Amino acid sequence: MRITFLVRTVWGIGGTIRTTINTAEALAERGHDVRIVSCVRNKAAPDFPIDPRVTVTSLWDVRSPADGGESLSFADAYRARRPSYLDADGVNNMKESSRLLDRRVKRFFEQVETDVLVTTQVTLNLYAAEYARPGTIVVGQEHLFLDNYRPQVRRRILDAYGRLAAIVTITEADARAYREALGAQADLVTVIPNSVPANTCGPSPLTEPVIMAAGRLTSMKGFNLLVEAFGEIAHRYPDWSVRIYGRGPERKRLQRLVGEYGLRGRIKLMGPVSPLDQAWHEASIAAVTSHYESFGLILVEAMAAGMPVVSTAVKQGPIELVDHEVNGLLVASKNVEQLSAALERLMDDPALRRKLADGGRATARAYEPDQVVLRHERLFERLVGNRR
Image 1 (tube, rainbow, N blue to C red):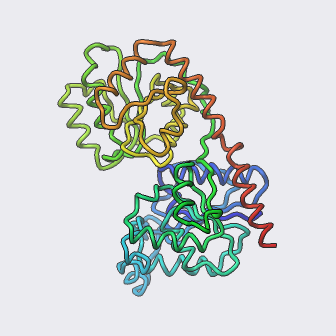
Image 2 (cartoon, rainbow, N blue to C red):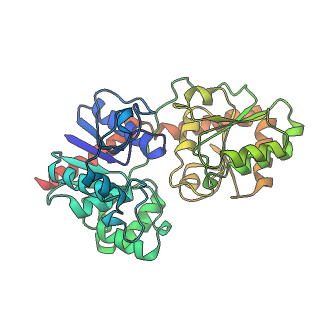
């Protein structure tokens, strides 16, 4: 089959980018003709390596001409400054949304030749409902909770999703919500989780006294809770340290908080690293402190690396992924005391670390690309078969 993924950008770090690449590569491995079309290109090379069997193109190179980007015509420069026609309700979450992007995406939908087109976020799902040619098989991926959207936006999204060939959610809880909201069109919704490859460095030996966290440094990720939780117990564990990988707007705030606890040498903001395989291998505990997670890709990545995980018990992903005391420990959201206690349990008990790590590896195997890709393939084959 010819399978095309439309993404906001493939030149960046993020869960949607990572899982799109994983899926595209797994499909290419199985002999399919796979393309990733990026709405925008903002750097010379992608942060994640991409199998050369996957063709990558972009609709708009937003880099400066000096860096290899486009030199826009006067008309296109004007369109690039005008708000997107699809953004009337503020639903679009792409900073590049503009009339220029509207125009280029519309042209893409008019010209694309593919058996299946996968749109990978709400903005692109809306574009597909608006611009896709009749007969185009569009599979819209939804990575957010339905109740994440305002009521008027929710109505617009549901109307658009009813015009697609299928909607893919990444958790069972999300699927239930979308099926209930879509009513008679509930059969459009299917669940396919994100995929995570096995760690290339093998399972962590769990011998290094390091707690690791990773993700975009935003308030939603709650890294301040990890700093505070470790700060309360650090004096009892002088050999242990914390490494936080990622970049984002909360970096300076986190640096100040680390300084307030006097732990600059023991809580380190490591910056972005991709892939994280070696970093996981050098740690013994994974901490996920998010206030919400649509899936919890970082949890599966840690489990695949043979790490015991401590996670906040937030919807949707963590409470589906983590079986308390079996493959990880769950703590209440925003509860520093519980987080400190869970970290202490793991720091004190190497046997518990190994037990939870073993449970996590068993969980992670179900999310390896060669397993998840079969679910995508079955869905695509059914949709293509129905069209014939």
